Amino acid sequence: MPTTSTPPAPPTFLSLPLELRLQLLTYNLTQPPFTGFRHHDAFLPSRRGLYIAESYSPSDALSLLLVCRQFRADFTVLAFRLTRFIVHVGEDEGTREVEEKLRKLHPCQLSAIRDITLVVPSTELELEMMFEWDEYPFNIQALHLDTLAIAFDRCRQTHRLFPCIPHLIRLLRRLKHVKCIRFIHNGATLERGFVKWAGFVVRGMIDEDRKQRFECEEGPRLPDVWWEWGFDEGDQCFELVATEPMPVVEKSVFEEAVQGWLDGGEDVDGRANEEVEEDV
Image 1 (cartoon, rainbow, N blue to C red):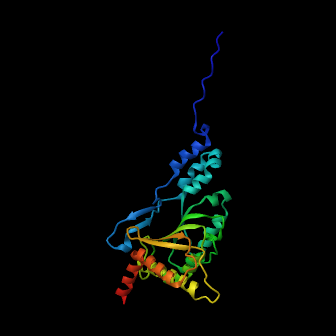
Image 2 (image 1 turned 45 degrees about the vertical axis):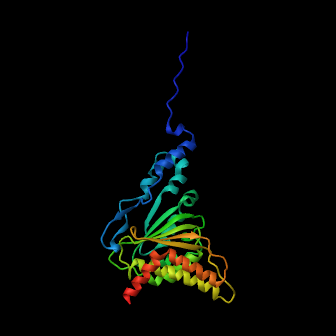
Image 3 (image 1 turned 60 degrees about the vertical axis):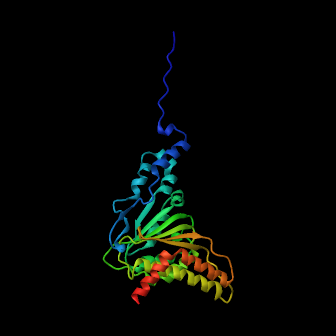
């Protein structure tokens, strides 16, 4: 008597090889460049550019980890690596509260994070806490960020950023494990203007590097990292990209390089100087 064979079960997503599942989920989870933001067009430069999208939540991108235990085991690292985390910093605890939340994550989740945006209110306390970081973002060595963004909260108070410039410059000379820092206007009210502030940061970086190289009695003090800068007028975004610092050189070589930096960053430093001259 002939026997009938049982037809094979139809393939399921979990029956696929893990490598193929990861490729499919990478395609599904990869976010567009401006995820979490919306672009606002306005006549005034101070009101145009990237704005935080209040409807965005990182938990939406991570919701697939709740499907089942196998999804959580296979895709946690991938999901955390591809998700932009936008965090509204509290006025009381500041970035320390964010640090505490990060430290509560599982080590594999923490080390996978690549993109964090901090929305900071208009008080100096939150930025001062950030300037207390030693070598690593949030004082967490396991954190390796592709992008750390600082978006200024749109509130009624005015952000006073100029007093923070010396502290920011000292942080930039020692901060590691961050490839790119972005300061996003976000339509906030900034004392003396965003472009002017960015220009003063650039000038301050150069002046501090010159001082540490040529005015220290014990010899040149090189930064741990140097930053290339740029300003996107359409997005109202001031960007710093980490690079290797210049080695020890003669002062004439340094000054020649500085002139090249300023020529390359004319869109920031040049316009900032024009604003200063107009104010005078």
